[in-house]
Amino acid sequence: MADASGRPRVLLLSAGNTNDITMARALVEAAGRARRLVADRGYDANHLRQFLAERGTEAVIPSTIARRAQIPYDAQAYKARNLVERMWCRLKDWRRIATRYDKLARNFLAAALLAAAFTYWLN
Image 1: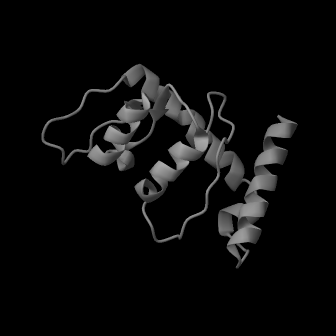
Image 2 (image 1 turned 90 degrees about the vertical axis):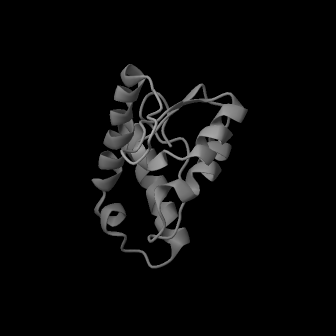
């Protein structure tokens, strides 16, 4: 999860064979209060939308193609999602992060946190 400037706010580790929405609730809770959540179609689920509504967070998530009734979203706000994509690209510039050399999750998370700190300290 990134802030409005494209800097990482929360980095959580999950198994490589799980889908993104599995960690969505934990990420939102760890990030704290937010006015809106901008995410891609992979996060389009009723339970996540309901959770965000209960927290008072606007869901800026386009509906999946399989959804019968498309849910409207703020297309202008959705354009800010490129900040998150650029954040991941900057982190993946670090070869250790992109290829996951570390066998232990704690070592990989530590390397990701160091890469994030260096990347945004230098910029």
